[in-house]
Length: 180
Image (cartoon, rainbow, N blue to C red):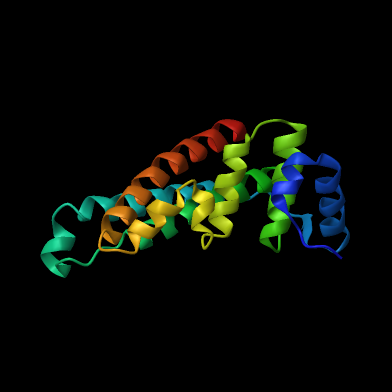
């Protein structure tokens, strides 16, 4: 069997439906209770914490830790916020998922193709939150990634954290509107 490919699912609704049906058949996607409010609460919790860490970089973190920064943790927490917002959307429809590909197939099929509630950028943000290792999919050029490896790593992480913050807040607000 071929590997799941969320980028293909964006282009090919039938392929996405094929994978979605397989995930349901194998009980990887299954019916559940509506825990969307709990997931949104976790989304907000993560956003508050990540924003707090960013604020602490202005004075407290340098005072205590010197040149050490924690933007990598901020980025991770933002991605957890996205993931919980995505789970809230699934949960509202009384579904739960056992893996990331199944989550993406559900969201792409129902909220990108069928309801058109999510756009390509939203899906990419969700996919990135599930697979953070692929830094290139975050829209940053190869040159910027290379610069990040040479003495401006802190600045790169700070810029990335700030960019992601805006995307995550916008995405979380969009999900909240969809769930009203």
